[in-house]
Amino acid sequence: MTTFLKRAVLTGAALAMAATVAMTGPAQARSLDEILSSGTIRVGVNPTLPPLGLYDEQNRITGFDVDFSQAIADMLGVELEIVQVGSPDRIPFVSTGKIDMVMGAMTRTPERAKIIDFTIPVHTEVFGVLTTEDKDFTDWRELDSADVTMVQVRGTTPVQFIAENLPNAEVLLLDNYPDVIRAIAQGRGDAMLDVVDFVGEHMNKHDVAWKVVETPVDVYYCSLGVAKNSANLKDWLNVAIFELHRDGVVDDLWMKWFERPMLTDVDMSPWF
Image (cartoon, rainbow, N blue to C red; front, side, top):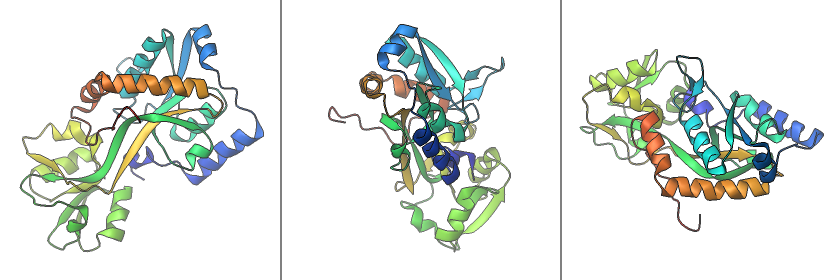
């Protein structure tokens, strides 16, 4: 499975493990008052999902998730403690109180919501089609043609998706995302299907008029995950996230790390 899609999918085995953890032992999640009294908030960040989380030259975890967590800690008036998590660890760690909240592209799903609670969304991720302005595609389904060449990373989930849903398209397989973006920029293929938000760094290296096809395959909404018995923390985080959206902090941090605006905005209406 492509790294990008792993951000939005928790395997059935991992979800079952999280459910078992939740049922066999009461979560020891801290309340908002306990976090304030301790002077520290513990946030789970996955350092293998750049630019959400990555290691810097000093081997410290950094990225969008760390900067956003720091903004939350600053609003609380507490210190930030980053706890390294992997994708399978995220839900068990927050369910058992090892961390107070978790990031790492936590897509809100009904299955996950049986185990943990979610705040309002922090950001979105668009699973869609990247192409160039000279192509007239308006819907991803229009790519199902022998005249279309999809350029994809070898061995990733979108390759299987294309085989199942766009069987008539030609597919050029390359070894990594920089090579895929370069091939499209050079006209060796027509489009790429993947989570488009995470290739902005590679897109910016080419003087090409890029276009994201108007109709995506899906849009993922990613939130903070908190334990089931932490309603007061979740309520406070909802207010804080709303303010960080309204003040433009989320957009600024997204531009800093992704080098392009978020493709689909989080609609932060007053009634969200």
